[in-house]
Image (cartoon, rainbow, N blue to C red; front, side, top):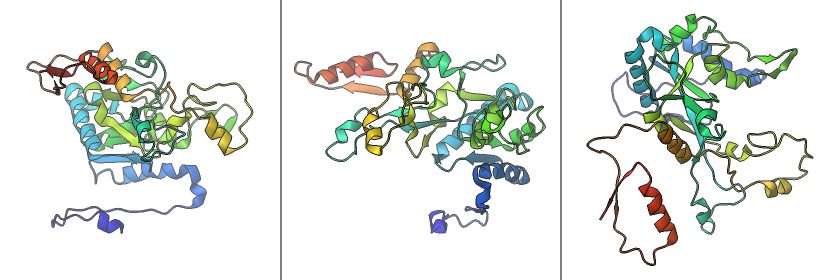
Length: 326
């Protein structure tokens, strides 16, 4: 069945997909994430791009193309050697569907305000807390990084993997265990093994110290959907981002837990909130002549209009989107 889904109509002998599925012992457990690193370096001369990802992330061709384009831009600005100090990053998002409603024809109105949320980056205010301009001065403005650089995946070119192998204090080709708390080898100090292998080893200041790089102008293309779409519900909960740290009695049954769930945490950072905050802090250069979205207001008159429409038109006027009223 998998072969039929990856069928390629191109008759060239070089066309098509080759997929290898490696079976590992169940005893491997959380260290299953380790095996990709050795495989990358074994096949380093065979491929120009390498992607490591957890199995619940949707990586689109657009994201891959944007990564390659932006990586090329960094090389053009800094040169190949200096460019290896950076890697174009990824940000995961989910949709903030109400936690306590089953969506069907009778409740579809509840999705009216559903939008993308960056649940891992909900510290306020977002600029300076969740995201900030990169600290390095050797690259042109327009680049940001996330305070929490966990991505669940990473992309790397052949040249970058070579450079990180020889990078002082990095040894990216070597599989290492995630750091642990002093005297407590079973207690991770910088995240689990999967967090270590996907993000922390590469971007951590005490490890490879590669700078995560996110260009503001193509930020949206470098965001990926976390398919389980469940982690946003953790925000505001006990022991989670924005939640109480006080010891509380654990809920005894599922119904009680569900009743305590908020519809949607107000602390979640939405895609529009982050976009607006970035544009307010670092306004883009105006396009002359303008090329972009133009909205035509063809509503007859304003008397008797739904107040929501009036308010939304007012909001549109305050955005950077071009609006033509006729």
